[in-house]
Image 1: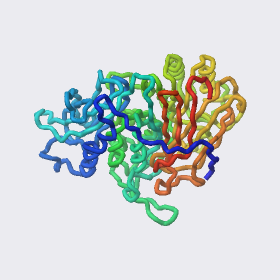
Image 2 (image 1 turned 180 degrees about the vertical axis):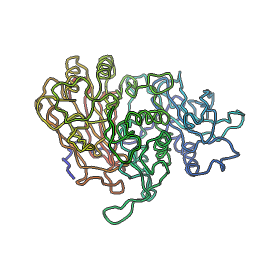
Image 3 (image 1 turned 45 degrees about the horizontal axis):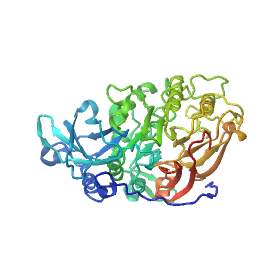
Image 4 (image 1 turned 60 degrees about the vertical axis):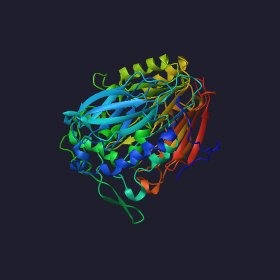
Length: 541
């Protein structure tokens, strides 16, 4: 393991009790009905539909909320049969003065999933919701309600913000292992009571079948829960849907989903390792060789299984978006997959398309310049200065941005250089980069005085993950933008299983009084590995 000493104060951080106007805080909710409801869902996941109570619709995959703003949010559910989705909301855990929201009809066209948009919510409040599934032929026949909660961002500058981020779930054949408690990292994340969770991509491994068992180096056996859809690479729409559904077999993930809203982005493993548009595969596991066909099927399943505002019906169909979280924070969610050019050695002296595409780059510049938030988190699904190779075609190609040449920008680096120059010259303050993808955790500081390209302001990039996947050694650094790896924790060998550790998530706290942003890199049990405090109002850090 390569690890640099951390001189920052290693405080643990603690859950916050943040009462709403009703005097009911999230921890009170979790100690009562919601925790019980989550427990009741566990056996229902594997129960046959015929055993559902009185033949009424049920939601054994739990509920989720996502893309929550100060006045709106999305609520998701999957039914076990055709049903009408109804959502009730209240600022009281007793559902006094509840509002009722008529949701969509859930059927096979969406794999029985549905999302309801909630509008006109009060800001800075704990919103309690419950989802009812009604028989489409008799609305009086409803299944047991499934409860959830989320907090809308406050419009007040002085209210703190806390969120978590990570990525990479069920990768390299390491799935839900009941022997080690399943996806136990979600318990540690839930204890921190975040406002939301940012998943930086690789929510599934569509190209990674999960076998019942896998051998570990010490001779023991890693046991997986399995499903038919996860027994092979995903090619059909049904197989992609099954890959997204697989993770919802985990009770800890379902409980977390019911308590914490999400901001979801995607990366390569939602489709296939290291994919790019237009790619034609030479992979014997696939009958369908067109990546574009697979990507379209995955995007549809992705839009069905996550509450994403821009992928709703009549929305613009983009994964990239800005999520406004009150006056302290804007989150710029990038899509570094859909518009990229083909993977190559990445040494071309000109590159208009790059990893973002021209339209997305101009969108990002425009939105950054418009933002009045104290902090502008750029949620990237791939790192900037870490070299991520692509050998899937047997060539020394590059998968991310950096190609290992420490000189002037080449290839996709040209686009990033253009963005960094824009941030500096427009004097855009408070930019921080967060990412996952490389299956270890680290902190990099980028400094012009160390760089070949110098026309940018210093900035930080923090890496976390995986959530439950193979862990890998630290990636090499590319010197073009002058990164210094201030902290790293990674194994010395490749594909270390979740049973052996090296699973990580990150925490971000913004103090409403001082405006300071604190990043903590944590292990799966919540132990703090590294802490960095950043000051507001600066173009560079």
